[in-house]
Amino acid sequence: MLNNSNFLDKIRLPFRKEKELYSSLYQVLGFYPRNIDLYKQALMHKSVKKRNEKGRPLNNERLEFLGDAILDAVVGDIVFRHFEGKREGFLTNARSKLVQRETLGKLAKEMGITDMIVRNSQATSHNSYLGGNAFEALVGAIYLDRGYCACMKFMEKRILKQLINIDKVAYKEVNFKSKLLEWSQKNRVNLEFRQLEQSVDEHNSPVFVYQIFLEGVEGCSGKGYSKKESQQHACKETLQRLRREPQFIDAIFSAKTNRTKMEEEPVSVPEDFESKPIEEQPVADVPAPAALLADEFSLDDITANPREKTREEIIAEAEAAAFAKA
Image (cartoon, rainbow, N blue to C red):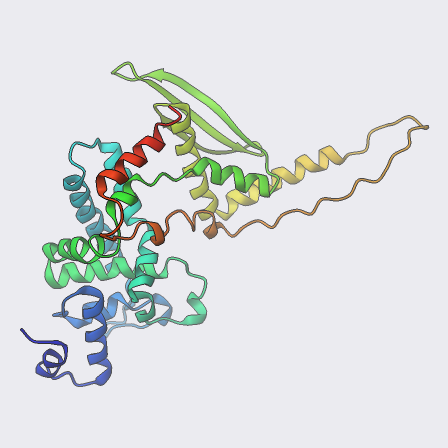
């Protein structure tokens, strides 16, 4: 079997830069690319504004689209086999945690993928999804270069065996309600939970639907088999809206301004009433939308480590914590 230097000498790469790219990709992927151009494109951000010979944009967006679909299939396959007997809702939630942009972005940074991206630094300095998008594009490149089985091997052997503990990710509970309450309190925004519906399903299990209102502005609704579960779903979707829709935040703070103006309108008081000035309270800065769920997952506590607790211990502790208040 050829080692790094022998392989690179064997294929007689014309440029030193090309040889360095092969070596870097080997460290990331665990194998050498066959079609290096696919991986170059996967690492090409649109800010470079490069075009091919036909004048079409040459960047990683198409490969990102493909990689996103392949990741869903591969991780869905892995989760299905790993968590035998678990219901569809649990499997969907576990997969979404593994393939979400925050997780992929942290993986890209941990593996050095982010440093390999060709980009205009000024145009992309605030792009928090840069690494995650490139990770997806690389998966698309692997699929076109080596096929579905290579993508499966990359995720199982390189990612889930060495970098992420799948059990910790799947059983990690994120308290979206706590995050939304913290955000609303920090910004003095009125938060209200309204129960829209309570019914039973075909198995006679209770079903609840709650909707969130921020300063009277309609947020998202959530459905669940308990009030807590439905509120958690509603909070998660509302947090996503706060991150992705600036106009949603604008509407909330516009409604807040109108409310505070009404509260500050002067009222008639007796002539002998002695009033004292009220100290103004500073208004908290609105956090950047991208930061609302930035700490949702941390690689610090989901990394794979054979010296840590066993899978059975992780699951037992997680389930005990989840049902402690049931």
